[in-house]
Length: 89
Image 1 (cartoon, one colour):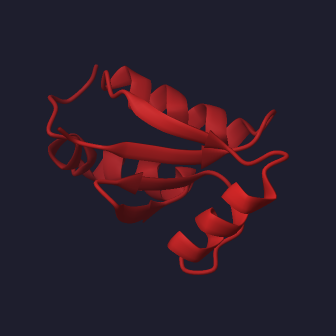
Image 2 (cartoon, helix red, strand yellow; image 1 turned 45 degrees about the vertical axis):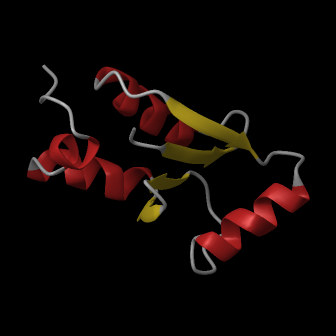
Image 3 (cartoon, helix red, strand yellow; image 1 turned 180 degrees about the horizontal axis):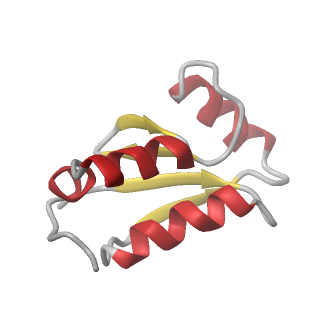
């Protein structure tokens, strides 16, 4: 089964937008809130190649990037195949 992970913080509009987009595809994701989680943020930064901004998104362990990258994949029509789902409305 496909594993989607998103590192996020409270009150982050980009995190919310990324989660909404994933939800529109019916994707169930694991969320790691790094708002007050320095260990989680350190792990995120290491996995994301030094990126410290949120969200940071991983699909089957592959770093996708943040919300902007997720939206670009969607607009290019490559997100749905990556997620193994049908296109959303």
